[in-house]
Structures are given as C-alpha cells and as structure tokens.
Length: 415
Image (cartoon, rainbow, N blue to C red):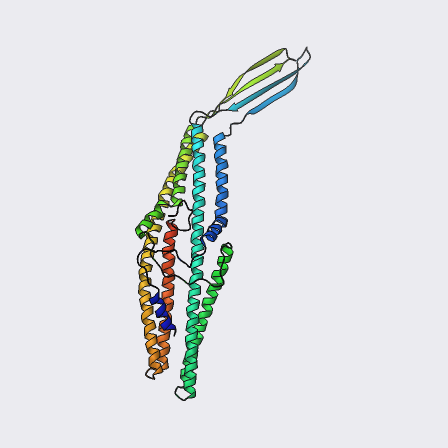
C-alpha cells in the first residue's frame, strides 16, 4: 500500500545531518546550466556594457584633446591702392593640466570594474531565477506523483467497498464517501498537473538551453552542505558582486569629484599661426594660446560631482546592509527549514503508520470506512506537507550556496 511504501522510502533513505558527500542528483547538468546562464538576456546585456565601459575608459584615457585647424582667406580693398589677397591659418591643441590625466585613467579603469561586477551580479541573479523555476518544477512534479498515489488508494478503496456492498457487507453511503474522496484526490492531482505545466513552460522559455526530461527527477532529501552555514553566510558578503560594484562606483565618483575640483581651472590651448597680408608683403608666424576663465558654471559642476560622490558612498553603505540582511536570512532559512523538514518527515511517517493500522482494522471489520478514509486523508496531507517543506528546505539550502558563490558560479569563484 502507499503508506507502507512511503515508510520504506523514508526509512531506506538515510537523512544526512552532517556534510553532504555528493552533489544533488535532481539538478540540471552543470554544463547546461553554464550555457543557460551565459545566454540569459540580462547577462548578455551586462557583458555588452563591459565593452561600452572599456570604450569609455579608452576615451577618458585619450581625452577630448584633439588638434584644431582653423584658417581664412580673403581679399582686402585699400582706398587709393589695389585689392590684396590675404590668408591666415592656425593649428592648436588643448592640453590637460598636471594630475588630470591620471584621474581620467583611474576613473575609466574603475568604470570597467563596475561593469564587470554588474555583469557577474546579473549572472548571479539569473542563477537565482533558474533555481526558483527548477525547484518549482520539482515540487509540482513531486506533489503530482503523490496525488496519483492518493488517487490509486481511493480507487482501490472504491473497488473494495463496492465488492462488500455486493455482499451486503457495506452500505451505499460507504460507496458515496469513497467516490467523494476519489473526486477530491483527482481534483488535487489536476491542480498539481497544471502547476507542472506552468513550471515547465516558464523553464523552457526562460532557459531554453536546459534540456528538460519528459518527467522531472525526484526531489532529493535536503542535506547540509560541507561547509558550516556560518561560513557560507560570511561568503555571501565577501563574494558579493553587488558590494564590489557599489564600492568601485563610490571610488569612481570620488575620483570624478576630485577631477571636478581640478577642472575649475580650465585646460589651456596652444597652437601655431601663419599669416600672409597684402599679397605676401607682410608675413608672419607665431605661437598662440588661449585659456577659458572658469566661473560659476565650473564651480557648480564641481559641487555636483562632490554631491554625487557622497551619494555613491551612502549607496555603498545601503548595499552592504542589504547583502548582510540577505546573508543572515539565507542562513536562518536554511537552518530553520531543514529542522522543519525533519519534524514534518516524522509526522508523515507517523501518519503513514496510522493509515496502515487503520487499513488492517478495516479489513478485519473493526473500523468503519469513514475512519479509513479519514486516516488516508490525514496521511496524504502529511505526505504533501513533507514534500512542500522538503522543497522549501532544498530551495533555501541551495539559495545559500548560490549567494555564497559555491555552486553555479564561475570556476574561479566556486570552491
């Protein structure tokens, strides 16, 4: 019977409360996961922004200091004389004052680091989405399997009570009760089937690179990771690309604020001028120089850059706090859901044993059908509760590993 099978399954699969010795078997292939994450639109867009940041860094390194060529040609009429052809030409170029080039190079390099960390965080967020959709699929499939077992139990009960009614050992009311229980189980199975379809559709659209078998693998029993949960909590903060991106952005804005202060003194332009007047009777060459005189506009720009640097530093503080909350919640969820699953598992075992004893009593005629149906319903609800909590524990433990970059992360990060 189903309840007996459940007891054998739970007893035969030893719960591991210590380090896990092997990777979960209900996860998609690692190479397919890597392809799917690298192909995610958000990740590809972030990688394109790295190229944009590198181009911006190159532009900052070179600077907008281009050679300018200007010139003019004209004819001059002099009263009492004749017309003269004249021309002049100037070649000039602005030059950065000392210290500005170094800041521009630093700001560009930090911009690239910001883009790279944002790209890694985009991949991390894609990992969380994939994990969520995958566990939705596993949970829905596991519930559907359980619901099919419940349907089979009630169909067996209907067949048994129908035979007993034919032998005048059961009333028509018993058949009605069994059919009502069967209809409820079938409705529940239909809902689970719908959940499977929705989860599979979402997975196939969001991550088409993941090969999906016809049926989802069985949901594994939760196992604590090899590293202590506290260690993983610390890694969530230490390896956070959100914090790194915010930190580099704060540094970049500080550099730009310093650059804004220096830019209150404008860069000079120096050039060489040639001219010819009165048909070449007068010729000349010389050095020309120009320099804007900074005023309120440049001061306002410097003040704005300083304010933006302060805002970026505050943003960094907020990101740190957010990630610390995430780390603490991850560890708490992993621990509490694992403990909850252990208790729920014991409850399912007890409910299954009670259903089996009730079935034996019903066969001996010592227990009514209503009591048997109630015991089976309780056992089924306990099994569904165990499946839901098992999935929640597996999901929480896996999220902690993803956030700590110990799985589904680039090989240079994962342990």
